[in-house]
Length: 114
Image 1 (tube, helix red, strand yellow):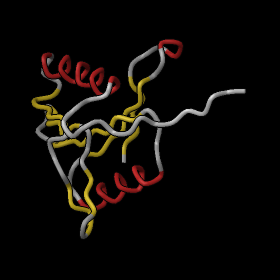
Image 2: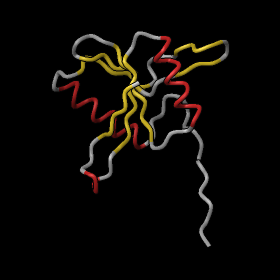
Image 3: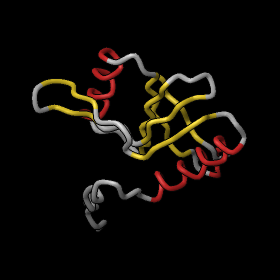
């Protein structure tokens, strides 16, 4: 009989999980190479409606100066997908979600734009 798996819950604000840490290292390499100008973990908090906010995992300034909001996901919950879609409709930023690709499938990051 398999044991049920339960989420451990969200880390404290400002703390990265292992996938976010790996993505931050990826962004640091892009920044060093000049492909992005700036990055900040949980650097923006966007109001979607009264008492409803969305905080992207990373705020990123691309090399062309455009602000991007990057969401790092292991898997999607319906409310998270809805929030990023609403934010993409309300704000003039690029919104992308990234998911770590396993080594079996070549590693790196799968990217979905909104």
